[in-house]
View 1 (tube, helix red, strand yellow):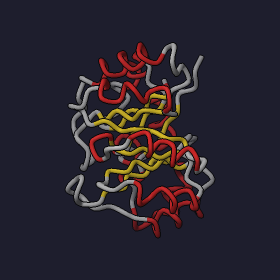
View 2 (cartoon, one colour):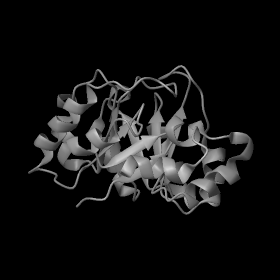
View 3 (cartoon, rainbow, N blue to C red):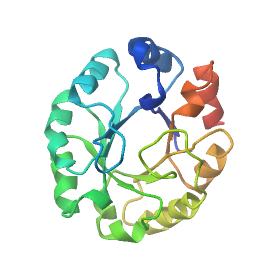
View 4 (spheres, helix red, strand yellow):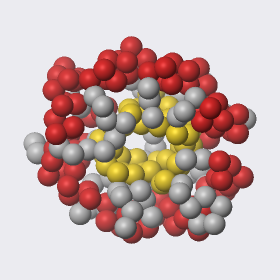
Length: 216
């Protein structure tokens, strides 16, 4: 039985008490810490950059999963590698030379992923699926937290599993956007390995219970 990884999205945390929030997430048995980096161009919002990521890295031993919602993701790879980030995903919609980005990340010792907006079909990255460590399917349009889950992601998960069953059976499928205990089981049954949740976890007074509810 495959292990389901739960990745709380730190963007939903209380940044006035960031260290305490990270400690509480660690104690709640999270597997990964998900960091959304937005540049105000690829998506409307602007979040945090390398200074904050370095501070987060110093506060936790959890693997860091950085989702780059930016127009020039290549500018971030070397600083993220130096920071010790384990997972990085960039948007297919933001780059031209996809293979180049994948191998820069992998050569830096980072697990490389591609993120797809809800309306972007998986066929757009089919040629590079053998080279990826994971795919991140957005189940909301990126840029804002707390949005309603888009069920179209179920078909994308199924397609990904069919496409990679022979060419890359270890590929992880990550889902981000509107993930709650109401849809987690269906996402896992469809083939998801990594569930990103922000409001569902940080909006719950009991982080341990919220994370456990996603696994169950």
